[in-house]
Length: 390
Image (cartoon, rainbow, N blue to C red; front, side, top):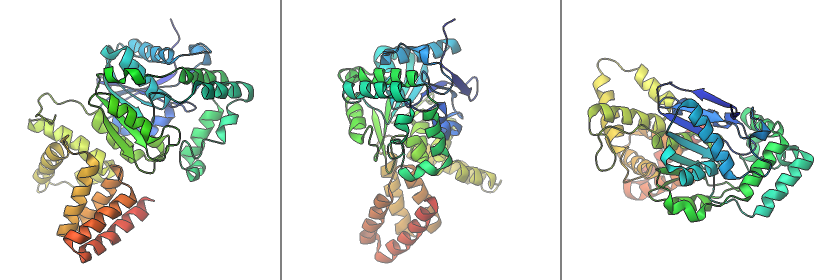
């Protein structure tokens, strides 16, 4: 039997399959912040690149191509008996996803491309990096990862240290083979032919694949959606897990059996399921779990109502994105003086990708139309919430 990459399976065995691909220099653990949310609705398979994590370096040729990495994913799916599957990938993992969507569209149900690109710059740069790592090991790359993968100060955090250790533990031959694949990779002229529903996620502070790379993909792939995460570097899902998890959970949410023209379910059960998924994505699991735990016979109908109507009908609409909905919600809460709800939705706005500067701008404009005292109170509430999140 052909050797498979090292991989791990999580989530209900009978749930729809979702395969997650990592970034070069990291292991499958890079997806840990998203795992709890995605395994609620999917059977999740995470895999390690050649020479990374638990995968052997010799799974692909020394001068690998992106198609070689895509074939590893297909072998993993075949081994599970999955004719079709959803896929999300970070950086080179996203490039693998675009390659699958271009070469094997019949296998993919949905695609998410996180901090990736349709091309990664000049081939010479990647071949020079491959030669450097073959000569000096992956230690040669470790010093430049803080400030590229994540904010420099995150390097001292346990997760930051674990990511750098993954890089140091990576087999130089496997890392170099992945560099070779990046050197020859360019799907820009194939993006317009991709038909799978696609989400593109960008970190606004990403120096490796800046937001312009994400916009290039989103503009070319028919119907693709784009989420830009403020303050996020190249490993946006680790750097700013909340907004990235929310975007992925919404994109991969199971399709309802019956839907309206915006894709929203038309039956109560479908609205309830979709609403709960969006409610958790926007407000966070801890908040929703607390609300559910406090639910009584007296409040149960109200909780069901807001899940079905506010979250299952309004927030699931596709006409406005969640960032815009957060701006509208903040303004309405400021205008009516709903201060407890305002604090909750400042947190939600951050999860939806708004930066502190953008939240401040919403409050400033609200001061013009809702009154200076209302804005003054709102600034105080938002400042406390943002300080708490920091």
